[in-house]
Amino acid sequence: MTLDDYRVHLDAIDFAIAGLLDERFRTVEAIGVLKRQTGQPYYDPAREQVVLARAAQDVKRPALVRAIFEQIIALSRLHQARGDEDHA
Image 1 (tube, rainbow, N blue to C red):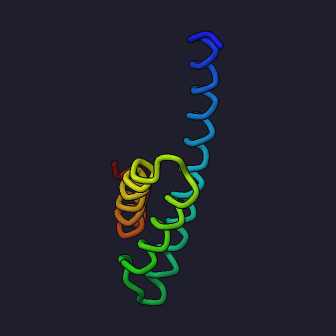
Image 2: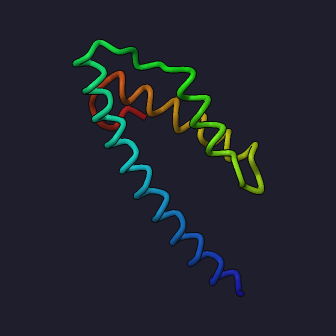
């Protein structure tokens, strides 16, 4: 593969990741609504640890994946607590 081939491939991966992140944040927003309605806290450290462990499972670079998911979760928590779009 050439450098341009790799870049095209990377662009396709980035596009897929962006779409999945958008879907994740929409789901987080819906969960935030439910939590507000039921009086549940936004921060659930046990759930976050489960998500982090699962994300880093069966990947070649678990520390990198975990670090990325820590940021995703932090932004998700912020988004969920605020209950509206585009906080970052």
